[in-house]
Length: 217
View 1 (cartoon, rainbow, N blue to C red):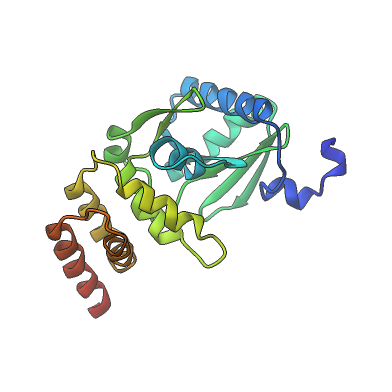
View 2: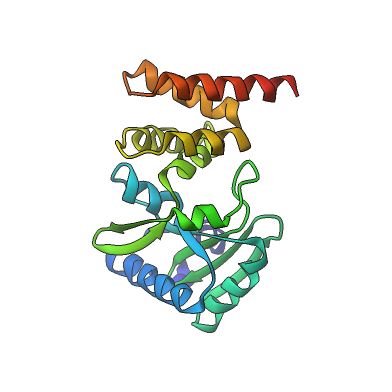
């Protein structure tokens, strides 16, 4: 099916399925372009969930950049033939090539920004054999807890899968949770406990204290 026969809304919403070869070709090009650009960036969303948590497919590519770099990232993709769109100046730009959508995110749910510590803790992983640098698992847990909605339960279960990792830096996760939505993260941690997942007592206590402060504020 050609791009002309697909609704433009569906294209720009990342609702169009493409074959694996096309998706990974666009991913590989995006990784290379942004790598050469020198723009600090990490991949997040479904790619990061698949690399760090549980196997699952995604129809789009989510890349996280600093707000001051969002325009440059979009220009880099446009120069390589991507169609681009400054979708929402508050948090999101988009690029499109071969029906594969690239979301250029510069403010994530809960007011989370890409910062130096996140970049320094990047995880270098593979998705179906393709190397990608993704945001730390701990940050992804917090973001997934914050973005979870009724129509997108996958985010909740992505986060639960991440909590099963045996290499989580719990102190870092607590610190990030204190900064962004401790009440939502606390609910996730309690749910994980109810499913017999290991969450240390001190983590629950620390996030609980932050959640109490959030409610009282």
